Amino acid sequence: MKSEFEQCLDDWNRYIGCFQRADPADPAAPSAPAPAIPAVTITDLARFAPAGAVVAGEPDNVGVAGLPTNFVASASAHTVSGELFGYPITVRFTPAGFDFDYGDGTAATTSDGGRSWSALGQAQFTPTTTSHVYSERGEYDASVDVRYTAEIDLGIGWFPVDGEVTSAGPAQRIRIFEAHTALVAHTCEQAPSSPGC
Image 1 (cartoon, rainbow, N blue to C red):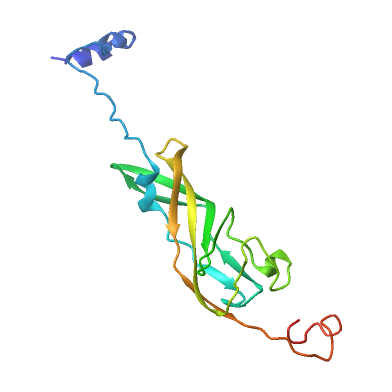
Image 2 (tube, rainbow, N blue to C red; image 1 turned 180 degrees about the vertical axis):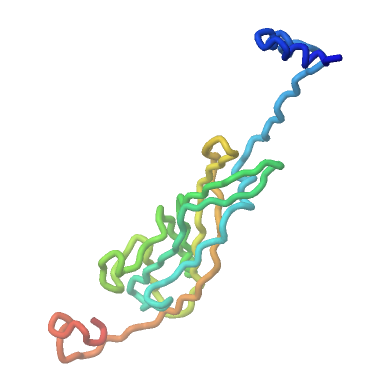
């Protein structure tokens, strides 16, 4: 004896009648609502944030009292993957601001981490957007905190998250010396490689 399915297949033109559509209103098979993903806040993303940037003072973490010391901190956009609320997530952090603490009671906020004098095409000890002038010799602990904006991807595209997350950077010891003038045989225009030029 043939099964009901085999009987249906005997007549190829009638096989469609062997299959019945599921009735979406059938109470026997209720559809469960998809689980809702909790709202993601910037606080939820803090554990994904990178380590703080290390600030470097030019030249070689030393400076001269009364002259600009140039500071550079490197930070760039990057992604971090992990799990949040039991869901896989990718977080993209983009630097939004740099909060410099020069260690002498002064601070500055900039939109970028600065660039070296060489990259700027400037001479040493000239002002930059991230430079600072120390008034007295001594040792100072300078640091920079980087503020990031965040976007998340749960597998369906990027969505921005309100707010910023801050990564605190470690302190960098900056030594500031005094410079004294001296008589020289030639000007810097006549002998550009002379001391102090």
